[in-house]
Image 1 (spheres, rainbow, N blue to C red):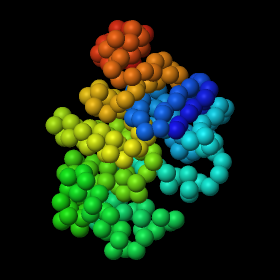
Image 2: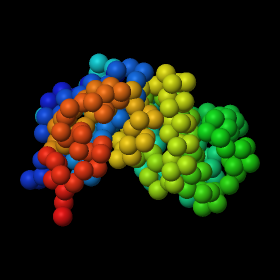
Image 3: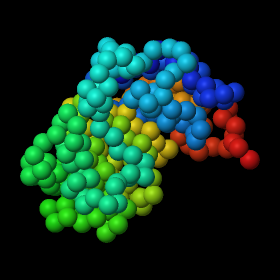
Length: 248
C-alpha cells in the first residue's frame, strides 16, 4: 500500500532522511521506532505529501503521492495526532465529524452527528460525551475522541503519531487495544510512530527502526527480541551503551 524508495530530505545542512526504503503491505500495521529527531515525523509528512522529498519516490497504492487530486488522496487517510489536536471551540461530536461536515465528504448535519456518536461508542465513549467540549474531558478521553475522528470517514490508511503520549500505563494499554481492534476490524493499513515499546508490541505486525535517516532494521514484531541487530537491540532495551550515541 505504501512504498518509499531511496527517499532523501534535507533542511539546509540538516540531512534528515538519507535514503529511506520501506514497504507497508495493505491491511497490515507497521510501527516506526527510533530516537527523537531521527526523521520519523518527516517521513510521515512525506507520505502525506506535506513535505516534498529532495529525491526518491513515495507511492500509495501504486500512485505517486506528489501527483493527482490532493483532496481525493487525503480522503483515504485518517490521522491520530500526538497532542490530540482537537478544536477547543467545537463540541466533541463536531470534532469527530469535522471531515464529514465540509469538503467532498460533506453530509447533512444530523447524519454527521449520528456517525460521530457511533464512532464515539466504538471507542468506548457514551453518547452524552458528544455535546461536551474538549476542555471538559480527561487526557484519555481526548485521545479517544481523536481516535474516533481518525476513523470517522472509514479511511483505508490510518496514521498514529505517538498515540499514548501523556497517558498513564493503564490508559495507554486501553488505547493500544482499541487501536489494534479497530485496525483489524476495518482492514485498514496502519502506520504508527512511537517510542513506547508496549505500544509496539500491542499494535505492530511489522516494525521498522529508523536511525541516522535510514531504516536500520525491519521485520515482524515477533522477531524484535531475536533480531541480532545492534541498533534495534539497544533501542528496545533502553541501553546507554551501543551504536546509538546518547546525547549527554
